[in-house]
Each structure stands twice: as C-alpha cells, then as structure tokens.
Length: 331
Image (cartoon, rainbow, N blue to C red; front, side, top):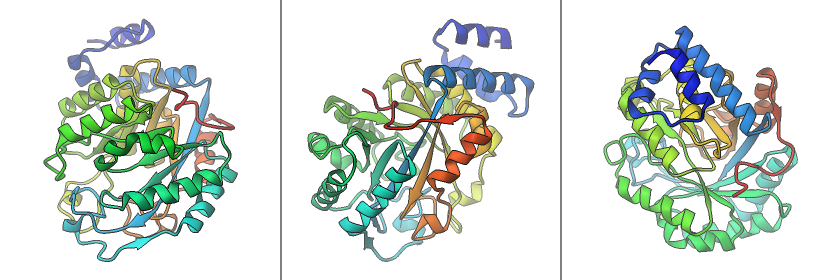
C-alpha cells in the first residue's frame, strides 16, 4: 500500500482494511508518509467539526483504592498508591462544575471509581445538573455496574458516557472484556452517546492490537474516538515498559481519524499535548480531583490541565475552540 492509495481511499471515504490500518501504524513516526497521514487526518478533523475544537472537563467525585486492579491505574489496590478513601461533597462538586462551565468547557464529565456508591453518584450528579445551564452537556465516566442503571443516568441529566474497551482488557485488568462491550451497547440503547478511544497505549502494544482496537471503536459509531497513551505510575510493573512519544501518539490519533466514519466528529488525544493536535486531535480534557494517571490526590496540582491551558494549546495549533455545548454529543 503506497501513500497515494491511502490518501485516495481517505478522500473517497472508503473503508480501510485491517491490513491497511496495520501498515499505516507500522510506519516510523517521523517518516514522510506519517506526516502526510497526519495532515490528512487534520484536514478531516477540521472538515467534520467546522474547524471548532472542543475542550471537555472532568471532575472526580471520589478517590479510593479500586479492586478492579487495572494495572495502568493509580487507583488499583495492587499498585499500592492510595490507601484511604475520600469523597467530594455535592457542594464542592457543584463549585468545580460551575467553574468548568464558566471557563468555557464544552462538556463536563463526572467520574467515580468502579465501586463508588450509585445512590451517592446520582444524588451528587442531580445536584450538579440543577446548578448548570440547561444546555451544558453532562457525561458520566463510571464502571460497568452503571449499565444496569443507564436509564437513570438519562433521567439524571446525562447526555453521554465515556466507556472504553481497554487494550489487553482482562489481562492487565480484572474486568471481562465482554462485559465492557455489553455495557457500551446498553448505554447506547438507553439513548446515551458513548465516547471512547484506543487506550492506554504502551510501547509493548503491537500494531495489530492497535488496528483491531481502532476498528472496534469505529464499529460502535461513538461520539468521539482517538487515542490515549499510558502514563507510567511510578513503582508499578507496567511503568517498567515505558511510554510512547507524543509523535507516536499523533500518528495513532491520525490513523484513528482516517478509519472513523465521518459521522464521528470528535478525535481525542489524552493526555493533552501540542503534537497530537497536528495529527488531527480536536478534543482534549481538563481535569480536577482524582486522576487514574496521577499520584497526586488533586490532579490540578499535578498532571491535570485547566480549560484555559488547553485553549492555549489549540490556539498554538491554529484551531478555534467551540463556544457553547459540545457538538460531538449532538446525537
């Protein structure tokens, strides 16, 4: 497969095969062909989003050691990072959400660890909803247990859910991959748009694994897809495997954009960075509170970005940012 064929198929909006996707991922990140693919991905992202990038923002309702033991997560009991639990009060959660809204976030995500009490989650979420503008988009970032309460999420004012089938699910985690897939289907049946991505990517993941996951995310017609690299948690087994570069991230983000249906307007990169924007990323996140990639209890004091900081990243990439509610969750 040559570069001409790649661009021709992309311009004709033809589906790429698994072999073609793998071949694009197998290119060296600094190869000329990779830069051309990144430029094409950027063109598509501008086209489908009317050149309006989005800034989404996430707040965490709690911090707790989690028995699901996702080995890439700082919350995992096995990783021995956090030993005590803490919960954000509804009043403080409202303050954080309203600050995101004031700063111009296009959607607000409410995250909780897998074993967080559902009743408490819904109570706080309703309180947040009641203090935001009616058009502000709310997105849940919760465990599979919430799939059984998908209609309750809708009733609580959520328009979407972030849910991903992670790389090597069931191997690097104690979660059945089939359950993740079923949860996605259940959320969508309830009327919730599902955002997802290929994550968390480490140097050990093969091009074939990434291609398979890109194709899976395309198959569910998500609100957005994209890619997230694994951030090493100090002292953990996966940390020893290292981290991929931002240029490699930009390559994967770009290939993902080429493969996604054009109906998928969002193409994310996480954590935020300037280089993946060149690969067509038009969605980045701000975060406060607990963060599964951080060893700080408050990620705003560590790895977390603010809404203004992300807006600056997009400006440096000569993107405008959307003013108002997310268009990625239009459905």
